[in-house]
Image (cartoon, rainbow, N blue to C red; front, side, top):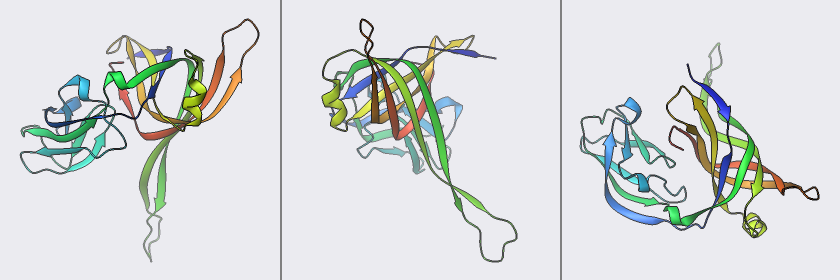
Length: 212
Protein backbone atom coordinates (compact mmCIF):
# COMPACT_ATOMS: atom_id res chain seq x y z
CA UNK A 1 0.00 0.00 0.00
CA UNK A 2 1.26 3.46 -0.90
CA UNK A 3 1.13 6.38 1.50
CA UNK A 4 1.18 10.00 0.41
CA UNK A 5 2.32 13.30 1.86
CA UNK A 6 1.93 16.88 0.71
CA UNK A 7 4.42 18.65 -1.51
CA UNK A 8 4.70 22.07 -3.12
CA UNK A 9 2.63 22.37 -6.26
CA UNK A 10 3.31 24.52 -9.31
CA UNK A 11 1.27 27.17 -11.15
CA UNK A 12 2.06 27.96 -14.78
CA UNK A 13 0.82 30.78 -17.01
CA UNK A 14 -0.01 29.64 -20.55
CA UNK A 15 0.34 32.21 -23.33
CA UNK A 16 -2.41 30.54 -25.39
CA UNK A 17 0.00 29.39 -28.10
CA UNK A 18 -0.13 25.82 -29.42
CA UNK A 19 1.67 23.88 -32.14
CA UNK A 20 0.03 21.63 -34.70
CA UNK A 21 1.48 18.20 -35.46
CA UNK A 22 0.29 15.60 -37.96
CA UNK A 23 0.46 11.79 -38.04
CA UNK A 24 2.00 11.33 -34.60
CA UNK A 25 2.65 7.76 -33.48
CA UNK A 26 0.80 6.45 -30.41
CA UNK A 27 1.49 3.70 -27.89
CA UNK A 28 -1.46 1.39 -27.46
CA UNK A 29 -2.72 -0.28 -24.27
CA UNK A 30 -2.12 2.82 -22.14
CA UNK A 31 -2.32 1.98 -18.45
CA UNK A 32 -3.00 -1.67 -19.41
CA UNK A 33 -6.35 -0.52 -20.82
CA UNK A 34 -6.89 -1.99 -24.31
CA UNK A 35 -9.22 0.86 -25.26
CA UNK A 36 -6.62 3.60 -24.69
CA UNK A 37 -3.60 4.87 -26.59
CA UNK A 38 -1.14 7.65 -25.74
CA UNK A 39 0.91 9.92 -27.98
CA UNK A 40 4.39 8.41 -27.91
CA UNK A 41 6.40 11.65 -28.05
CA UNK A 42 6.40 12.89 -24.45
CA UNK A 43 7.00 16.50 -25.55
CA UNK A 44 3.63 16.51 -27.37
CA UNK A 45 1.34 14.97 -24.75
CA UNK A 46 0.03 18.22 -23.22
CA UNK A 47 -2.78 19.17 -25.61
CA UNK A 48 -4.61 22.47 -25.96
CA UNK A 49 -8.08 22.19 -24.37
CA UNK A 50 -9.38 24.82 -26.81
CA UNK A 51 -8.58 22.96 -30.04
CA UNK A 52 -9.87 19.89 -31.87
CA UNK A 53 -7.67 16.79 -31.53
CA UNK A 54 -8.16 13.86 -33.93
CA UNK A 55 -7.06 10.25 -33.48
CA UNK A 56 -7.77 7.14 -35.55
CA UNK A 57 -7.23 3.40 -35.23
CA UNK A 58 -6.46 0.89 -37.99
CA UNK A 59 -9.35 -1.34 -36.84
CA UNK A 60 -11.95 1.38 -37.23
CA UNK A 61 -12.75 2.04 -33.56
CA UNK A 62 -14.07 5.49 -32.68
CA UNK A 63 -12.72 7.99 -30.18
CA UNK A 64 -15.10 8.60 -27.27
CA UNK A 65 -12.87 10.69 -24.97
CA UNK A 66 -9.57 12.58 -24.99
CA UNK A 67 -7.35 13.23 -21.98
CA UNK A 68 -5.75 16.58 -22.92
CA UNK A 69 -3.29 16.44 -20.05
CA UNK A 70 -1.64 13.11 -20.86
CA UNK A 71 -2.25 12.94 -24.63
CA UNK A 72 -4.49 9.89 -24.34
CA UNK A 73 -7.39 8.87 -26.57
CA UNK A 74 -10.07 6.43 -25.38
CA UNK A 75 -11.84 4.36 -28.05
CA UNK A 76 -15.15 2.50 -28.09
CA UNK A 77 -13.39 -0.85 -28.40
CA UNK A 78 -10.10 -2.74 -28.14
CA UNK A 79 -7.23 -1.03 -30.00
CA UNK A 80 -4.37 -2.86 -28.28
CA UNK A 81 -3.56 -4.84 -31.44
CA UNK A 82 -4.30 -1.97 -33.83
CA UNK A 83 -2.18 0.95 -34.99
CA UNK A 84 -3.37 4.18 -33.42
CA UNK A 85 -2.34 7.50 -34.95
CA UNK A 86 -2.79 11.05 -33.73
CA UNK A 87 -3.84 12.38 -37.11
CA UNK A 88 -3.88 16.05 -36.10
CA UNK A 89 -3.06 17.36 -32.65
CA UNK A 90 -2.47 20.81 -31.19
CA UNK A 91 0.00 20.52 -28.34
CA UNK A 92 1.46 23.01 -25.86
CA UNK A 93 5.23 23.26 -25.96
CA UNK A 94 7.24 23.74 -22.76
CA UNK A 95 8.32 27.17 -24.05
CA UNK A 96 4.68 28.34 -24.02
CA UNK A 97 4.09 27.81 -20.29
CA UNK A 98 5.87 29.80 -17.58
CA UNK A 99 6.22 28.91 -13.91
CA UNK A 100 4.77 31.89 -12.02
CA UNK A 101 4.01 30.50 -8.57
CA UNK A 102 4.68 27.73 -6.09
CA UNK A 103 1.70 26.22 -4.27
CA UNK A 104 2.24 25.30 -0.62
CA UNK A 105 -1.28 24.07 0.11
CA UNK A 106 -4.22 23.03 -2.06
CA UNK A 107 -7.69 21.54 -2.03
CA UNK A 108 -9.59 19.86 -4.86
CA UNK A 109 -13.30 19.06 -5.05
CA UNK A 110 -14.47 16.91 -7.96
CA UNK A 111 -18.11 16.50 -8.87
CA UNK A 112 -20.33 14.74 -11.38
CA UNK A 113 -23.73 15.86 -12.64
CA UNK A 114 -26.46 13.34 -11.88
CA UNK A 115 -29.51 13.55 -14.15
CA UNK A 116 -32.93 12.00 -13.65
CA UNK A 117 -33.61 9.49 -16.42
CA UNK A 118 -36.74 7.94 -14.92
CA UNK A 119 -39.25 6.78 -17.54
CA UNK A 120 -43.01 7.08 -17.22
CA UNK A 121 -44.51 4.23 -15.19
CA UNK A 122 -41.25 3.27 -13.44
CA UNK A 123 -41.43 2.35 -9.76
CA UNK A 124 -37.85 3.43 -8.97
CA UNK A 125 -35.88 6.42 -10.12
CA UNK A 126 -33.18 5.93 -12.76
CA UNK A 127 -30.09 8.10 -12.58
CA UNK A 128 -27.79 9.06 -15.45
CA UNK A 129 -24.30 10.51 -15.03
CA UNK A 130 -23.66 13.82 -16.74
CA UNK A 131 -20.56 15.99 -17.05
CA UNK A 132 -17.70 16.05 -14.58
CA UNK A 133 -16.22 19.17 -13.03
CA UNK A 134 -13.68 20.22 -10.43
CA UNK A 135 -13.13 23.24 -8.23
CA UNK A 136 -10.59 24.02 -5.61
CA UNK A 137 -8.33 26.48 -3.89
CA UNK A 138 -4.60 26.90 -3.48
CA UNK A 139 -2.24 28.93 -1.34
CA UNK A 140 0.66 30.20 -3.41
CA UNK A 141 3.93 32.11 -3.33
CA UNK A 142 4.12 34.31 -6.44
CA UNK A 143 7.42 34.41 -8.32
CA UNK A 144 7.14 37.35 -10.73
CA UNK A 145 5.70 40.85 -10.82
CA UNK A 146 3.09 40.68 -13.61
CA UNK A 147 0.73 38.18 -11.97
CA UNK A 148 -2.14 40.68 -11.68
CA UNK A 149 -2.12 41.42 -15.42
CA UNK A 150 -2.37 37.70 -16.12
CA UNK A 151 -5.10 37.29 -13.52
CA UNK A 152 -7.45 40.02 -14.74
CA UNK A 153 -7.05 38.85 -18.34
CA UNK A 154 -9.03 35.72 -17.47
CA UNK A 155 -6.18 33.54 -18.60
CA UNK A 156 -6.20 29.76 -18.56
CA UNK A 157 -3.50 28.38 -16.28
CA UNK A 158 -1.83 24.99 -16.07
CA UNK A 159 -1.41 23.68 -12.54
CA UNK A 160 0.32 20.72 -10.91
CA UNK A 161 -1.11 19.49 -7.59
CA UNK A 162 1.83 17.43 -6.38
CA UNK A 163 2.09 14.81 -3.64
CA UNK A 164 4.95 12.53 -2.65
CA UNK A 165 4.46 8.79 -2.96
CA UNK A 166 6.00 6.66 -0.22
CA UNK A 167 6.57 3.14 -1.49
CA UNK A 168 4.58 3.93 -4.64
CA UNK A 169 5.44 4.44 -8.31
CA UNK A 170 7.70 7.48 -7.94
CA UNK A 171 8.83 10.46 -5.90
CA UNK A 172 6.48 12.99 -7.51
CA UNK A 173 2.92 11.99 -8.30
CA UNK A 174 -0.33 13.89 -8.23
CA UNK A 175 -2.92 15.66 -10.35
CA UNK A 176 -2.60 18.25 -13.07
CA UNK A 177 -5.12 20.29 -14.98
CA UNK A 178 -6.08 23.53 -16.64
CA UNK A 179 -7.75 26.09 -14.38
CA UNK A 180 -9.21 29.57 -14.40
CA UNK A 181 -8.55 31.69 -11.32
CA UNK A 182 -11.93 33.08 -10.29
CA UNK A 183 -10.82 34.77 -7.08
CA UNK A 184 -7.68 35.95 -5.33
CA UNK A 185 -7.05 36.97 -1.72
CA UNK A 186 -3.77 38.48 -0.56
CA UNK A 187 -2.03 38.10 2.78
CA UNK A 188 1.17 40.14 2.95
CA UNK A 189 2.45 40.79 6.50
CA UNK A 190 5.39 43.21 6.68
CA UNK A 191 8.69 41.43 6.34
CA UNK A 192 7.18 38.12 5.22
CA UNK A 193 6.75 36.44 1.87
CA UNK A 194 3.84 37.55 -0.31
CA UNK A 195 1.13 34.89 -0.23
CA UNK A 196 -2.16 34.56 -2.08
CA UNK A 197 -5.12 32.24 -1.76
CA UNK A 198 -6.50 31.37 -5.20
CA UNK A 199 -10.03 30.21 -5.96
CA UNK A 200 -9.93 27.78 -8.88
CA UNK A 201 -12.44 26.64 -11.50
CA UNK A 202 -11.63 23.58 -13.58
CA UNK A 203 -11.12 24.01 -17.33
CA UNK A 204 -11.30 20.70 -19.25
CA UNK A 205 -10.34 17.52 -17.43
CA UNK A 206 -8.29 16.83 -14.31
CA UNK A 207 -5.88 13.91 -14.57
CA UNK A 208 -3.62 11.83 -12.34
CA UNK A 209 0.02 11.29 -13.28
CA UNK A 210 2.84 9.35 -11.66
CA UNK A 211 5.41 11.47 -13.55
CA UNK A 212 5.24 15.04 -12.26
